[in-house]
Length: 391
Image (cartoon, rainbow, N blue to C red; front, side, top):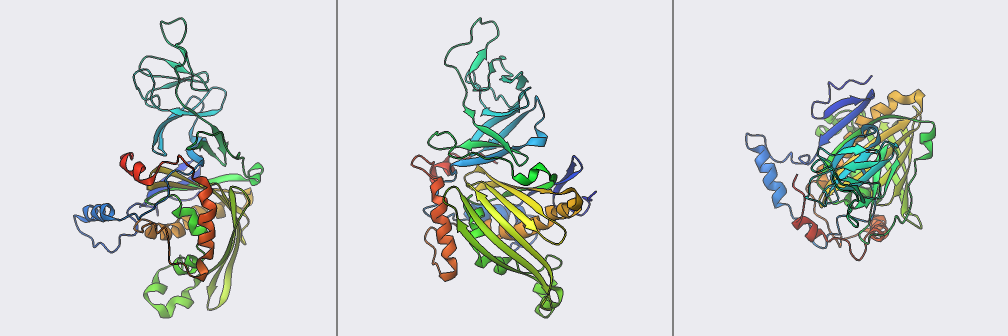
């Protein structure tokens, strides 16, 4: 079993004997602010002064978003979820199906997720015990023979995929434009753990990283083993470094693809080769199929906007039983690589018209492809920032 003692900066616990790492990364990337008793205040001031850019895309693209962990939502369980600028109630009915509705009762506004209970497949309000069925319609009011007609709460289309509960979000109120299903590997592979991070960035910035091939060697080349190579350049090749190559391509629909190779080289000798096939599915879901000497690993990433410029990013790890320990290691090492990007995201602004060079052609192609997830009634970034949830 993996030990949590070395993860002091993480909220670290074990769920079903699997490593579960959580970290608030919104203060990563502020090493330029010196230590002192008022450092947190100065970081907060820097965050407030940050200019987010002009012509920033809408913060909530149309697509599927993970809102809860399947293993944490037990039958009869209720969870309060604040995502996409919404307050939601996620619950699991007695039939085992996960459901999601708007949080507030239309009667007098009680929050169904705070003290509400599951009755059959209905959610019951804690205030006056009104019940709402699977479709959000009011079906029972104590002391009243017939529930009032036309009284309902919004019901969100849900699906359980890759160990998470997902909801469909669409600014035009359309039914899902595509369906999602479990990765085929999950039929025989097991869950090995997860990491979860809160990042201060626009949602588009995170998947755009995959199309930004040039950043791989610029940001992710230094060794994960030690930072001595950066401090003392003459040790760089002795300690070793990561070398990357990648190719991004778009599908004909809501998917895009990356083929990625990694080599860890010490004195020009390749000591660790990794191949990865990456599939982006809509704006908020990425699957990374990793092949390395210790066996295959599937990483299912979800990116869910908590508010306009705040994302919850979760990586769930799956693998065959024989290399379960290796997959558990990936929970930590993949997070360390991810944190290097976060250090930049947390302080950067969105540039709508970059000064492109030849190596940036895939960024331009990615932005064109990603634009399909915005539509006529998508909430603008400015409006979302003016009506943001407080965190």
